[in-house]
Structures are given as C-alpha cells and as structure tokens.
Length: 77
Length: 77
Length: 148
Length: 148
Image 1 (cartoon, rainbow over the protein chains, first blue to last red):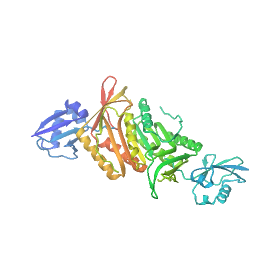
Image 2: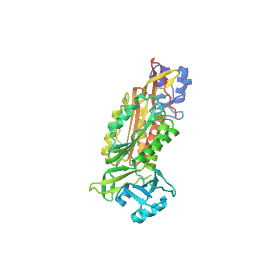
Image 3: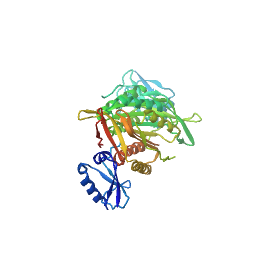
C-alpha cells in the first residue's frame, strides 16, 4: 500500500524534496509517526495534514494511492 | 447689528439665494425665529446652524458681522 | 515616516480610476507599509419615483469642509498607527457609475488600515458639510439623503 | 446582477497598480454599486536579525488554494448582498513595496462592502495554503509567519 505525500514550504526544506512515497501506513497518525521518525526535524515544526485537499482534524484512514499533503502554517497575503 | 447668513443645499432652494443679511438678532435662537417667520417652508426642514464654521448645539450669542451658516443634513460620499 | 501633509480634498468632477492607480503606485517607495485599505464611493443609478438618477451634483461649504477633513485627519493619526492617509471628494457633477469619494489608508498591519478607513468614511458622511442633487434625465432633481 | 464567475486568482509576480486602476474602471457600467472596498497587501522591507527583506517569494498548494478561494467566494456571496468580488494573489517573487494581494468587494452600500472585504482577507490569511520566503540581499531567507 502506497501513500503519496506532498510537502510544502519549510517542510519541503526539511524533507529535501516536494513529494515522497510512503508504504504501509493505514491512517494519518501512523503516517505522521513514520515521517517524524524518518525526518526528526519535523517534530519541531507546526503543520497540518490534508487528505485530497481537505485539512483533517483527527486520525483518518488511508487507502492505497491516497494523496496526503503536509502543510506548514499558512502565510498568504 | 448685521448678521451674515449663508445657506446651502435645499435651504438655498427655499430662500432663493446663497447669502442674506439679517438685522437685530442677538443670538441664534432669535435668528432662527426670524428666518422661519420670513421663510415658513424652513419649518419643515431639518438643519443645523454653524457660527464661524462650528456647528452649535445650543443658543449662541451673536455679534455684529458674525457669519452664520444654515446647513441641511450632510450627504457626502 | 508619518505623512500628514495637507492636500486639497475636493476635485472637480469624478475621481478617475487611473488617478487611483497612480496614487497606489506612489506608495511603492514606502516599504514600511504592509496593508492598504481603499474605500470608493460610486454614484448609483437609483430609481426614485419612477425616474432614474443619471448623476449627482455635489456642493459643499468648502471652508468648513476643509476644516473638518483636517480634524478627521488629525484625530485618525492620533488614534491609529498609520503610515499615510488620503481623502478625495468630488465637487460638481459625477455621473452614475463614476467615483465621488476615495479614501486611502495605509499601515504596517491590516487591522489598523481596516478600522481607520471605515472610521474615516463614517466621519465624512456624518460631519462634513457636503450635499448632492440627484439629477434625473429630465434635469429635475431631488436632494440626496445619506442612509446609515 | 451578481457576478460569480470564477477567474484565476494567482498572478505571477507583483500585482501592478495600473491593473488595479483598470479593475476599478471596469465597474463603471455596474450602476447598482454604491461602495467598493479594496484591500491591498504590500511587501514590507522588514528588518529581521539585522538583515532587510528585499522580496517575498510566494508558493502555494495551488489545487487546494483554488478550492479554498472558491469556498470563500461562495460563502461570502451567501452571507452578504454583494454585486461582485475579486481576489488576486501573487505567486513567485514580489519585491518590497510591491503588491501581493488584491481583494476587491463591491456592494450597494458601504457596510456590506467593508464587512465582506475584511472577512475575505481574514479567511485568505487563515485558510488558504500559501507560503512565502522572505528573501534578504545575500539571498538567504526565512519563512514568513502571519500575525493576527
């Protein structure tokens, strides 16, 4: 099972690319644990996650091929 | 004793000119009584008076040569 | 950085969109500004008793109006931390669809700009001696009344 | 009279003052409008740890941002009686003193225009996935953080 993870702003600086693939994460909490394990600097970073362009507020199930975005605090305007 | 009275907007329509001279009014209340006597249509009209560009809120003494403006409701913007 | 220079508020006829664009462009050098709020009053083609307003003819008690604009300016700079503020109001005829009032407030942050701009517009409507004849196609008119 | 046509929000680089002037001019034919409120965000030359910001480089999650702009638009037309509303936001580099955000709200009366414009700006700052690198003279940068 593959999840496509897209990252923005300072999160992209930490991860070093704009898109990664993550295997074997069945929900957003396990995805977050895996990402902070692989990229420890993420722990010091504020961010929200969006599944298919919708910001999630609690743990959300993921399916093969889902697109999850990691979004640091917005700074438009 | 002469008071110079300047009028604007619909008040000028009622009086038929933009400036008149009024004699023997020692305060703004007596001026108002004289004006509404001479121009009865003023009674149906909302207005404030300004002495030397300051809107007055109560009866105000007048001296020879004072300039009093009769101002209908403002409609700027 | 505060700019409190007094300029002429009244302009003859409508305020042109290109003048507004040029006013905005002049602020490019003021790099402490983060937020502008601009209010524009535009003449509506209102229908009144079956007749349609084609223009408003503005008149004012100019000496008193200039004093009031100055007081509004002083009070707003005392109350808010603004970089600059400009007011322009038409005198004479302004057609429906054209602009008769231009209030331009600039500040570091948006909160100040929004609040100050709104307050200036309310003060102008309430305290500045300006009147308008709403002119119809047949050259008859009614005196404009401001609503809240 | 409501105009809810979806247009592209993102523009590459700064929003020019003449574009703003032209946008205002386009509303001359809409004679039910009595009030416009325009908010402009301008890049500040802030000093951060002794270095001065020379520009902001904006990036976004474009697909999500366009969805959010659409949601903001729908919600604001449902809540307020507006004639029209336009939003433009920069993408890429915008120098200090240049304009990066243009929100343009038009209504019959000023109250609606003021309230809707302010609400749109707050919604953009809060809910649209846009980020900015504050660039310094030496090409180093920090990520911009929005204040309330």
